[in-house]
Image (cartoon, rainbow, N blue to C red; front, side, top):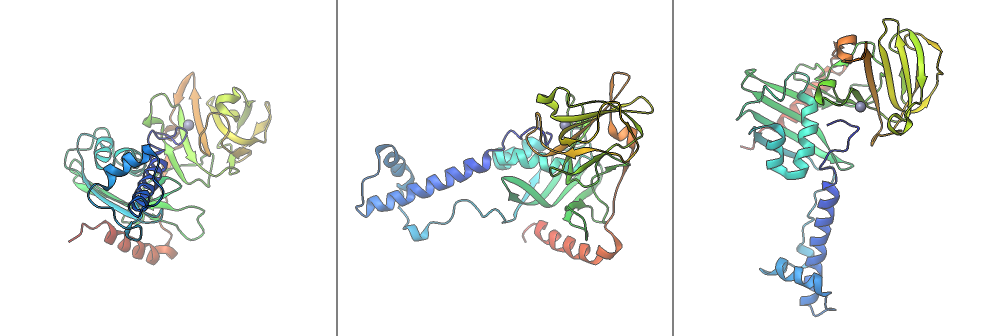
Length: 325
Ligand SMILES: [Zn+2]
């Protein structure tokens, strides 16, 4: 899954909210009916009969069906067949989305299609923000690797976004060396994730500067708008074509010479894009190139000044993840 494509199960939260409020309404209608209030419409009263068959609780006793968005949920799972299957079995459509978000944390160190074995242990603590799961902490104990991988969400001092770090304080996600964007939330799609998706996706707020990672020449801008939105293509000196798609604005024109670091435009959500992100794509001699191969990867670590705060955060998150005694 990429950030470009809405996850299949994305409407789950709306559905859950609808289902929750429907149930609540039904219960309230039932109590009114029992109290001799106005008769409910036929279709609803049929549902009432089914829902309230045992005993209609008084309205005051009705618990909210949907947990508040900020509440942290914890899951402990044993891998069966695949991550998607495991999460789907645990939590249906919500689980499908969670599986995708979970995968992004561990895709850097594990081949999630080959390395997982039945019985590998997963622990994940998460909450929902705007209908999407945000993982606070997660671990994956891999039999094949003979170790557990960890990810703890933490915001270093001064950083624009939180990220995930392992138990030693090293960021779980790699970063492109001298990449096209500095301030992004997360890489949400790697080239290897999907065969037909030709690039790497960076989730970033609209308006984030996009720079040319290499010296080169602007070949064209804003072609095939319905797919690409505002976009720039740069030919690097070595002949590699680099494309930057879905921008909110382009700041260069065809024929311009650019240096490494020249601002090409600002990130956006234009063209065929469902959420603000940069799509970065490379091609050489007609073949797609993995940005990781051209740039190489680096990993950040928690800065020394944040060390104590990180250790405290990690300890608290480990407490969340620990199975209940
Ligand atoms: Zn993309």
